[in-house]
Length: 259
Image (tube, rainbow, N blue to C red; front, side, top):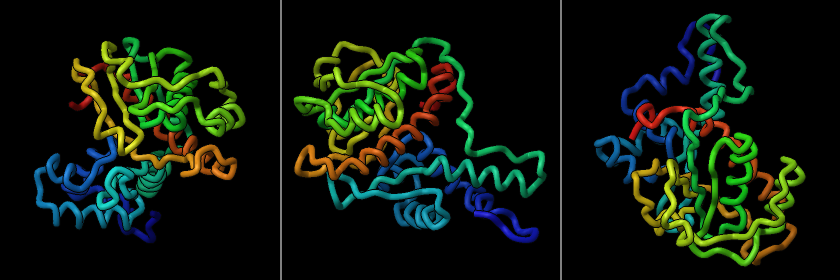
């Protein structure tokens, strides 16, 4: 997204439009479907869809078919791409305004011990990976757990393998659990990683911050076949990226977080 000559960087053109900026800020918090974005920004669907196409063309937003309803798509803001685009824009204005977009977002310990729940259907791959990575990155400063609407008998072996080989984390003794077992727990964030579980996730009360990460199931349709391991590597990398950008939000007080 670099520019030439004295033209404003492409990111500036895309983000400067009020509606596109609003869409970017909504998608920075959660993945959404078009009809949900229409409701949140209060604009007609054809207008929202038009600006989403421009954001997709600029590489800032991606779309994935919903695993719950294949006629729907979830839109996702690529925060890594935004970081690089912002760095390019700053450098274009003045070299001193550039920054290293490959460095991790700054994070500080949360003012209180935040509680985060990751939910997916089987609680055998995506959600235990997210749970383990957030606990690892916060050194236990965040109370984090995961559960599923239809938990599998065990954690997928490739989920255990990818965390051990790529992150040095051992979850071999972990067992999936049902969302119903957490009905009396209080959470600051409830994050669904599965389009199906988002539709059935129970209400945990106390108005937790809800977010959705539309991430495909890395497990092959046949179950535990080893051929699916590369998908687990990609899934763990995407989840880790999203968690790195979650950390600064966890460091903010509840009053600072947009409802």
